[in-house]
Length: 392
Image (cartoon, rainbow, N blue to C red; front, side, top):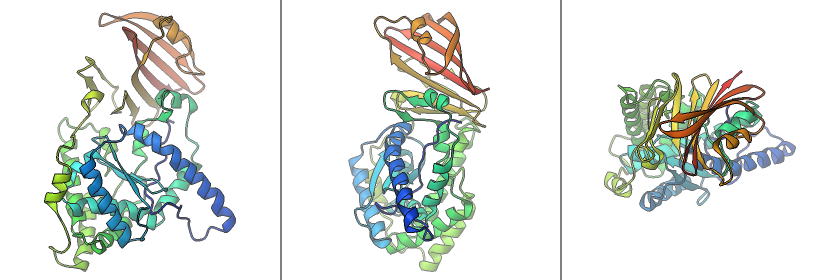
């Protein structure tokens, strides 16, 4: 199984929220383990979602929203640190140490301050209800990571595990936990002075965005799994529930929903794929700057991350990675591949190949549980590498 990115849903403050039944002797090791996991996941998360996106106006607005929610909720002012991720995907989540994350794709989808407040309040609610700790413990107990495939999908220079399956693990709360978090978030945004109907409006926008991406050739069937709604209750059910909760607070028109201020904050925000990373359309990847493109096998989901393209099959039995490295002056392409491209994998049957007029090689590698098909193309001192791993 490819590496699982240990994202723990959300956090309410700098300490770890523990189930009330935990004894004093159980608390220390659990806190220590989760804190260490959170610290390591930050860098892995940045790599998986394109790094941090610098947007000072949007960041300032998000900071204000988070502080208002904290004051209205658990009162832990200053306990949160928010990061905007450079990804067109629509997602938001947090780590147990109080780090909150939103993608620029999500920011572009929100239409006013109440809508973005509803997103952040929903994520924080998972922690106040102790959902995040429960999921963190399930993640820590998992032993589904294959070291060989980790090396296929790892960034060797940054030590950051990156995979599409990692992103699919972000939203694994139960249906009831999601509905509970919706209810908590509606009450909290109202206490913070925002329009409680913002939750319903954002969910409606999210549903329309998902429907659009799922239509025609905008998104393949497998890409749908990467959407924020993929493991949440159906949107109409959630909209009805949050609207009913808002009605219990008051009639439409109450609270802040400052559209002008929010749109000014995100003015100039990049939208869609980062050009330097290339573009993913279904199973097809194209990078016009590098004049490179390929189509993944049927059933694969692709993601263009920083300096690489990663993919995984629907059932997790296959994974791929495309990236590039610098070839040493004293190395040939064949010697580079034979020298142990993937540690612990014996590379055999190395064959030279002309690929679009450039020197290349193809090879087969065999690990304990995985078989690898390797391809490399040399352009100057750069080697463009393609790895396809399959179980068995």
